[in-house]
Length: 331
Image (tube, rainbow, N blue to C red; front, side, top):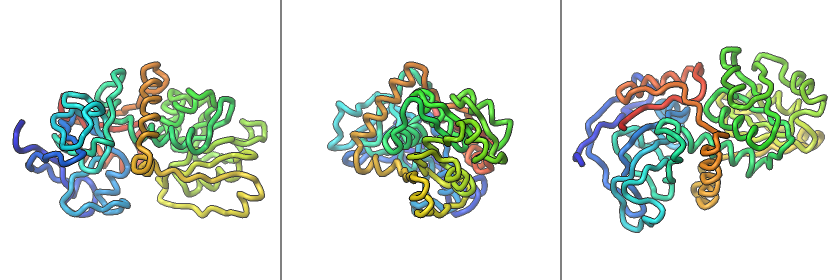
């Protein structure tokens, strides 16, 4: 193994293409409970945009390596690592800030076997989006066969995951997208009906559900999308809040939730990784099974080479992408 590697590093706060430099740095060594991975592919995500801008809830000291989700090979393990769980030579997926590099150190507890049915790009895009959708729909909202599921940003990375998992669970999925150009992506991911964000969403959902409304809402957008959801949520419905891509965290009106008898549920997936990793293992096993059956498959819009990583993050920032963008690092 070489003693140095190439790594993208954020050197100051700003837009990705302006503040990310490709540097030669030392290959890190795994500490106790950690593993060293040779990176195959990194799936970029909106937190990478926020990390570059200095707006993410976690703010690493400058300079730092961005990237939070990857597929790679275990090349070394630190002390106290259970090698029955993570072993040298194993192809794994994992998540931690600092993976947009040729090698990355991760906690062993955050690494899991990469599904054999997925290629490197698909596997890199599996963990955060599909875990978020799985926990939001099944752990928090108790989605059941026959339910109606409304998914906002249904052509995005986490939105396509929610559509696929909703359809796999036997729900009727209504997807909301920002433009007609994105509608086919949502349909291909399992949305039976696709609405535009510019539509009168509350009226259209009630029309599609015979006035009953949606049993479950999966909302990574916030702002007006959340407000529309409160107007078309069913009796005993559940709105799962997973993010605020609109930039607006809307107020939750307790009096409205009381009168209409619905629930608003927060979902912060990283807390499960911190507090109950065994439950994350269970979800990963189920996602691996669904991937093997063909029921779920990450939607990879494009794979860019390693030297174009800032471009991948910038493309994500402008909101025009569908599915996931992945940076190829090595075969």
